[in-house]
Each structure stands twice: as C-alpha cells, then as structure tokens.
Length: 351
Image 1 (cartoon, one colour):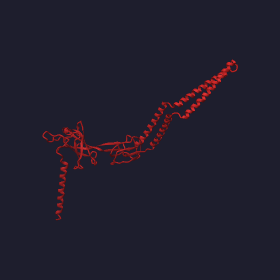
Image 2 (tube, one colour):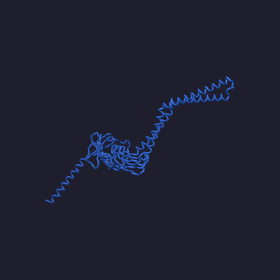
Image 3 (cartoon, rainbow, N blue to C red):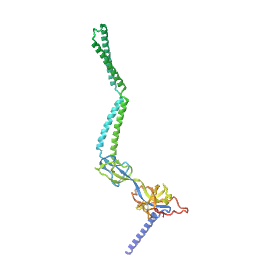
Image 4 (cartoon, rainbow, N blue to C red):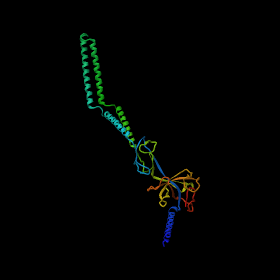
C-alpha cells in the first residue's frame, strides 16, 4: 500500500500536467480560424527631460521605475541667484510704474497755482518797468533832454524789455502746467514700464523652470543627474516612458495588406500571460514596403518585403514593457471566393 501512494501521486501530477497543457493549447495556441497571426514587439514613446537653464541641481525626487503623474515635480535647481534677480526686477518695475502714474496724473493744483503767482509777479514787474520808461520819456520830451540823460533812458528801455520777456516766459510756464506732460513722454514711460514688466516675467518664468515637471503620466526609465551636478538644456535629467498610448510594431506581407484596415480589432498575447489577451486596434499601416527587420520573429525568408503596422493596445494594468515580444491576432476582413482563408505568406501565420 505504501508503495502504491507514490505511483498514484505521479499519476495525478501527470493528469494535471496534461490538462494544463491542453488548456494552454486551447486558449493560447489555437486562435480564431478567421484571424491573422503576426509577431511584433511593444513600442512606447519616450521623453528626454532637461532643464531650460544651466544651474546646479538641488533635488532629484524620482528614481528609475517610479510611476509619475502629469505636472509632478521630478527635480529642482538651486534658485538663490534667481530669487535675487526677481527682487531686482520687481523693484525696477515699481519705479517705472510710479513714473508713469506721475506723468498720467499731470500737474498738481499747487504747481498750477505757483505758476499763476509767478505770472502775476512777472506782470507787475513788466508794468513797473513800462511806467518807469514812460516817465523818463515824458521828462526828456519836456526838458528837451536836459533832465534825463541818454544812458538813463536806454537803461529804462532795456529794463522794460527784460520784464516783458520774463512775463512771456511765466505765461508759457503756466500754459505747460495746465496742459500737463506731453503724450510722447507718457508713451515713453509706458514702454519703459512694459520692458520692466517683461524682464520681471522672464525672471519669474526662469524661476518656474527651475522645477522640472513630468509632462504626462509616465514611468521613469533613467535618472541621468544627481544633486550637485550642473544641469543644462543639452543634458537630460530623466528619460521617461509614456504609459499611454502603447502599441505593438508588427509587419505584414503585401499579400495580406487588403485584409487589414485602420481601426480593425485585434488581440495581443504575451508569453507571460498567454491566456489573457489584451484588446487593441490597428492604428497605422505604412504605405512604404521594406525588408523584414532581423528582429521579426518568423521562420520564413527574411528578405521578403513587408509593411509595418502599429496596433494600439489597451493596457490598464501596465503589463506590457518596452520591447516585449508579443503575438497579435487580427480579425480577418476578407476571404477567398469559396469562403476559405487565404494561404499564409512570409512574415505571417494563419492557422
């Protein structure tokens, strides 16, 4: 009895192994008879992230294999110098803002009142000089030049001319005070303010660019810098692989080209989970023929001309990895006239 137990156990194991093999063959190996089998590899879009400026790296917040979200901060630069530049740019913008406001406000009432007072004083001096010159002229006429000398008369005439000139200048100053600054001066002040604000916005943008953010949901493939390194636009800090979209790059022979259309349904199988097919659709069909790449896994001649296709795959569980070999099963869109599937050709396999 004791010797029979190992034999029974071995028999049970053999039966289970046969059942598992049969199930695998039924689920993975035997596809739909109206399908076209292709072999390809998973492809992803990759992003090389670099800073926009050259500065010392202060923080690296992600590592290889991390799943990152869009707008997540991945790294940061030292911002000591940028903070000082921001303060200076803000101060310069404030100075230009105050200068523009002063010009737009025009003359103050006190300035206009002062100009009026100076005009009144100039008017009084001009009247006084005119009266003095008139008296000397009258005295000269009565005394026939005996009471007033020629020099005194000339001096009085000159004083009158100076007083009139001062009155004219005071009147012009009053007009300028009432009119206010010129529009050209206000326009110049506005332009200077705009330039200062542009400098301020530039420094703020540089400060924002000091933080490196993920542009989309992705997986960190490579971390290329460390804190203390000098970053530059030509030196990437990370390489990211986008988690969506994913597609399979496969190749189809020319004889099967009429059976494949954009949007055609497909199933993608992996060696890791042959029983769990991932849904997909044909998204791209090349219009140019090429020789079969050496990485295509077919047993036929590798010199046959094929066309590249891309099958977009829905992979919510993130099972597919870059470069992973997969099997693509395409639902056929055409058959022979007798209803049978067309014969297989190099680069494909139809069961």
